[in-house]
Image (tube, rainbow, N blue to C red):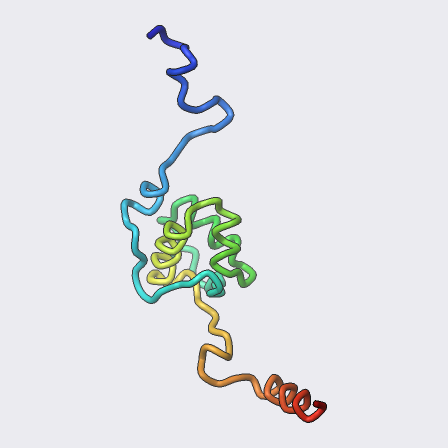
Length: 126
């Protein structure tokens, strides 16, 4: 088959460098630490600049995106990476203390008192 045949071309020139998801996650498919579901909210932690020296481009994108609290689902959409890869990268960042997980009141076992008051008032109105 001569070079330049359409069958030889596996990506077009506009695609740029192609990196497989397992290469981004360094071959890992499971995150370290606790399980992160799609609604888990993550925010960038305040850390010294020296701790961020060995970051990959995806790690930097996650940290930039999480300057304001973001859900895992939002990060998956922003990065256009599979959920498993984003979870592995977040697990690494969590382990290094570069991001923090924000726990909603309902998950911490103690609902917000204002929500309870609204529920009671709504029930009384019935």
